[in-house]
Image 1: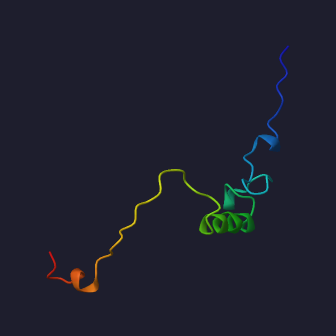
Image 2 (image 1 turned 60 degrees about the horizontal axis):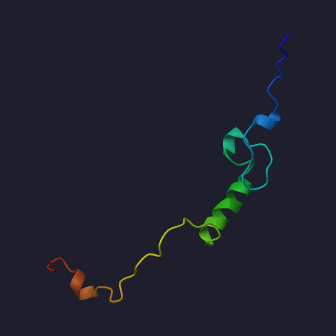
Image 3 (image 1 turned 180 degrees about the horizontal axis):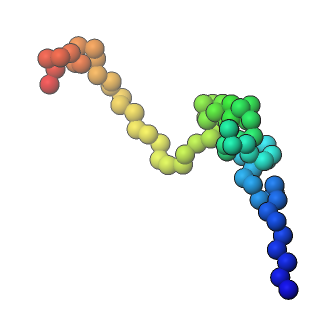
Length: 71
């Protein structure tokens, strides 16, 4: 005889910030507070996408080079 256990709350997705069960309205987070914490981490650079450093132009174009007649 096979006994199957019903799905419990432990199988639901967890909030990536605090680990509580996520809520449909703020998925994948449990609350707007955790969503704001996550956004703050992105904006302050705590989360980074790995890859080579971006190359920056040493001499940005001057304002006169960006006019409609510039080509």
